[in-house]
Image (tube, rainbow, N blue to C red; front, top):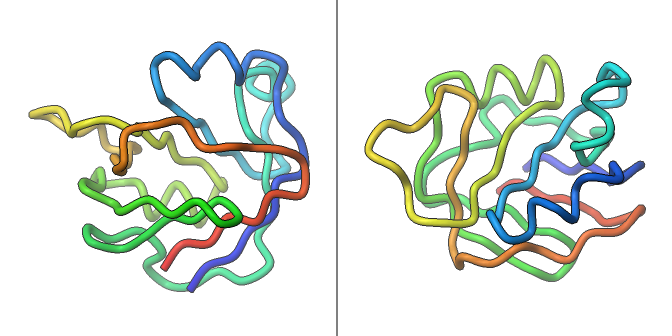
Length: 117
């Protein structure tokens, strides 16, 4: 299990609600990316936090992972970065992307606990 806590929500994050995309970045994210990202910090980090059939939980909201890009786990572990799409997977999943269902934008606030199981 991997557990992380939301530390900051960029001013542009609400603009991604319609597209149902959440962009996570660790605390070392550069200033130009912080505006569009949810900045989080790991409390517990497991070896392979993202896997098809696993879950991503934002506080009490749970989503099932339906697709994982080839570099998503590496990016998440090294940079705290992953783009989560709350929609049906595309034919070609981008290397750093994760798709999850149900297809709606999660509720986010500073202090939200993100759990990957």
